Image (cartoon, rainbow, N blue to C red; front, side, top):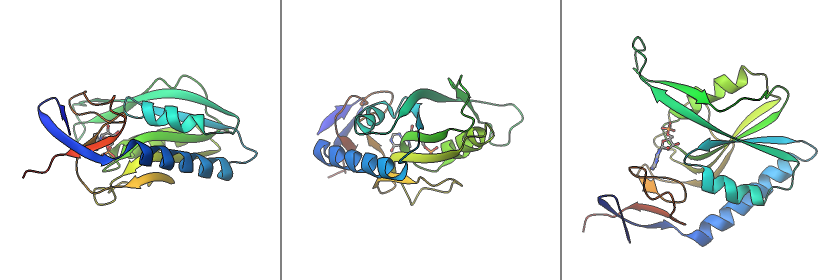
Length: 179
Ligand code: IMP
């Protein structure tokens, strides 16, 4: 059990399970992209640890870029929130792009990102996420590569944070159930 910020968390997915699944995801990506060059677009901050481990197992010719989606409040938007892609300074035209994400929850982030990428005329765009919450998902772009399907509950560790803390943990933790 760990205390992060003001809450207690318990182990949910161990370091060994993550290692095994990350290697297996990379094998699938390698097999599916034989003869292709791939651009991995890593979404900061959450995906930094997953991407680092995943890329060690990638045997394809590839490049890696790190991007961020900022949220800001747009005065006239009905949702009140607009996400803007930051850090993509190169052309992705004609490239095979794989977005590397820590978790796909409602799908809002991917709904903001994927159309923006598609407009830039890549050869293909796919999503690789370590965690996916199918019960919470209501987006238009489901991940092609998913490490673990998990229930609709808050998790942290291995890049994911709670109040910006806990990203350094080497396993995935969930909120401790009240006893
Ligand atoms: P979505 O836009 O609802 O799919 O959520 C994606 C983003 O929300 C992720 O990139 C995370 O930053 C954050 N997020 C969603 N669920 C969790 C969670 O259980 N723990 C920590 N962060 C989460």
